[in-house]
Image (cartoon, rainbow, N blue to C red; front, side, top):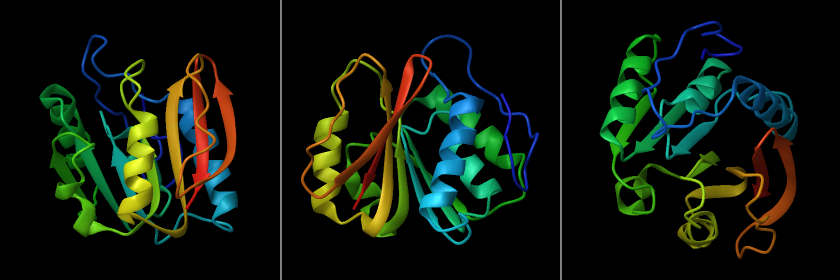
Amino acid sequence: MRVVSGLYRGQRLLAPEGLSVRPTSERARAAMADALTHRFGGGLEGLRVLDLFAGTGAVGLEFLSRGAAFACFVEQDSEARGALEHNLRRVPTTAQKIIPGDARDMSAYKNLGPFDLVFMDPPYGEAIITGLLAQLGTANILRHGGILVAESDAKEPIFEDVPGFTFLESRRYGRNCLHYYSA
């Protein structure tokens, strides 16, 4: 696994062995970054990014590589957080913060917002997305006009009607889907 494009292009990323962490594929990360570049009018430069259930940090690192000004990574699993810390040490950026803990507990990162872009990739099959979207919609963590992307298993339902968000589209990549929302 590696950073696909930008300043850190080709940088290899460490991921823990086993099934506890399921990094977003390079193909999906590249397509998402390209789609977001278009949605933000030509680039990701200067954006403040929140990466929830960050795992290895591959998504947030991809955004930093493409010019994001800051990335906050929230990860509860200690093994995944170890890989995330390792990966962040390998790139020359201080524009990041790691928050150890459950992404559903916003008290640890709410004051770092508002963010321009939120990405979340919760464990599949745990019905976390709908509840967390509702929380994020009322907490003003995402600035008005910002974009939220939620990754889910393709078999999970699409969450189109969420207070505080406008559903934009879903895109499928193998067995995964990326759902795009606007605040």
